Image 1: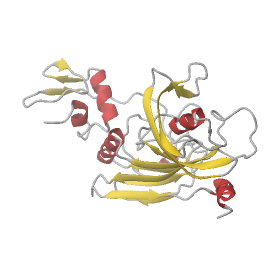
Image 2 (image 1 turned 90 degrees about the horizontal axis):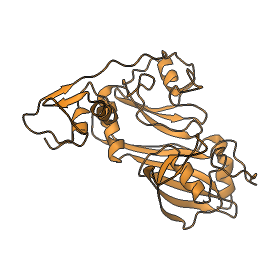
Image 3 (image 1 turned 135 degrees about the horizontal axis):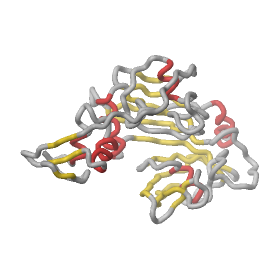
Image 4 (image 1 turned 90 degrees about the vertical axis):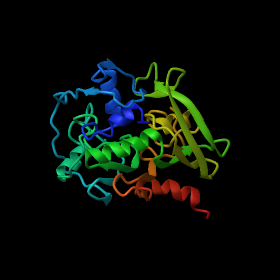
Length: 294
């Protein structure tokens, strides 16, 4: 068959993503010829798969949230949203009903089941403070197709970050292993036991105080860009978690990180789609500070 078991399973309409397929395998809900398997198992001709999909766990119901959304593209399979800073992507502790998912429900937009009852349609996430582009799946087939591209790291994602100082060299690759900080549990840090994280960066403009850095994600770990730039000595302006304790001369009203471009293959047409978003108004003073002499 050629495909790994987890890849084969997520092609089934009942399984929304490779993550869900891997969890089913790890929970021994997938048997091949009566035996448990690993996600990397390669199916053979004549294999008999027995798959048990448990019902979704009980949880709080999703309530609609009347919040204006900037939808820059929509069709029957997906939509692309330009998320503002301050909006949480899906319900979590402290944010039960004021999230992007709740706002999508308020508009009556159909969403895929996703990998969790509180995360319908969510293929990937942005931090609450980060603005920019997100793709949302409207059905399970689209969710599975898009999730596979994220797993294969074929999604194109560029971020713009305004940072303190100037990274050296002006372009390069930051590679480390990220895990939750051993002391500050809200933070992540580079640690030997973490997950591999790779960020490609290029300094687009700098002066004696700040720089505009373009980052391309090869992996997509939690807080990846924020940690990598901070550990390089150039924290993102306005970052309450990874910024320095001492006040800095240049201030930002929010985390100065914006998901600027997003490119992927469409699940139905198989054509490449590419989207770009302008910097939000609150970050323009930082842009003008760098480019005022041009």
